[in-house]
Image (cartoon, rainbow, N blue to C red):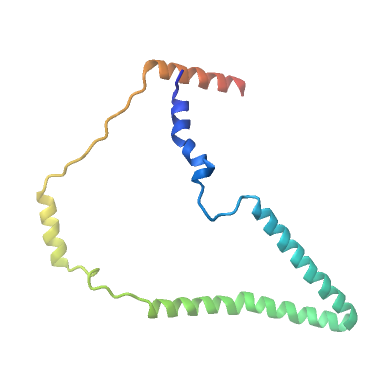
Length: 150
């Protein structure tokens, strides 16, 4: 008994095939390993920074923390956007292509527009593939059964 659903599933089953997976990509669970490594590395560095601040005393640690946060925020909010804008401007100036082929004259547009307007346009239609009555009936029963379950 064939239905629309089995035809669609057979058509798209190729996409789920592990043999057709993109080569060179890691499995999905490697993302969790990456998150764990980042978490462990960050917390290890923070732990040792905290231990070193105990050596310096409270006043020096607070001054150091204030200087660190100030420099980080000024870099994040001021210097990095300026650098990005400057690099974008430089790249747009130096790597700009001036293709003479891309430039179009108005007379050419008018000439080709008149040529195209004089031609007949041909449309190709794809034939409609209708499902058989038995296929539609079986699909309806499958759909009604799945709707009644929920």
